[in-house]
Image 1 (cartoon, rainbow, N blue to C red):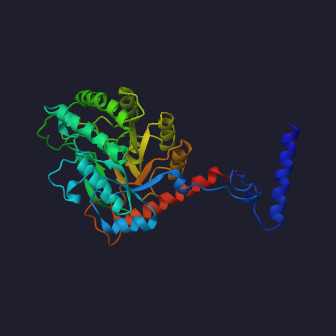
Image 2 (spheres, helix red, strand yellow; image 1 turned 90 degrees about the horizontal axis):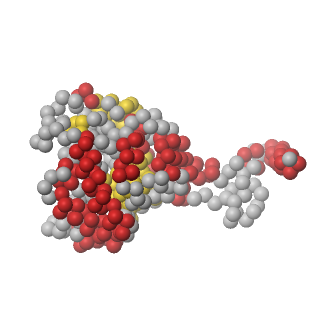
Image 3 (cartoon, helix red, strand yellow; image 1 turned 180 degrees about the horizontal axis):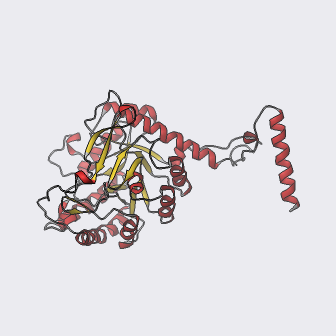
Length: 380
């Protein structure tokens, strides 16, 4: 008790002294950290990007303008697919070692490090719908994982949306200041005609997912690969007769429980989880306890699963500072990238959600949050 009182008096004296000299109490009371020289009032070392791997998506190949800007921003992680056409190997299967090596080396030559494969080959309708030929497709996926491991890529972002993947009813809705954003309204989508596959039930998709996980997760463990399931986007019950199952927090927990493993994890696409009704900082901490977050899509939205629009990072419904703070506090230090940025003035909307100028704004915002949470964790 006396020790606590003495400490209180000591701190009060420090604050008073700082104020008298024109300083502030905040600066006077910062914590001294290991490596800071134990000098009173000195800030400890701040971890660059909060220790996370800032990355950018390149679904349009070697976009030299974006690559140059990302090198200048020091955003050096590359996320994309294994596109054999990018490296002149049209006749080589994308899961083969020759293709994987060539794409990895091509990114190295650009000064970037490929950190995540998003949209893996050898994972299509045969596997997700349980059609003839799925075992061969799964075998190719296993080969792919082992080949990624050989070149130092350890994360695969995938989804369980057969036939119809990412879907929007409007790719050019006017947002803040006239920027173009993507949007979805289920009223405009619910009466669309079925696909050639007819009605696909949720039960069927759960069965095919379990079959896939039981086949690939043991091999992922051997290869040191982290499988990161992406939410369905949007999270409606079905589109054109094709059901969707990765649509709720509880369903993600069910997926993780199908085959518990450090290799079986998620892509925390926080816009989608917010549209499910989840509190993002809380769910990050919840999945963080499981060490299940392998990859982050840092984005913001407005609305709910049946009607929503993308937003700039600083104007949607997610508390982005608290979200970043949660990632930092759970010890997430993996790859993170902005997603679904608005198309800004004088930029092309040919690839909605991936505007180059919008990417600049998003990465600056993300880095600012990273510095803020890192500094806050090192001060009283």
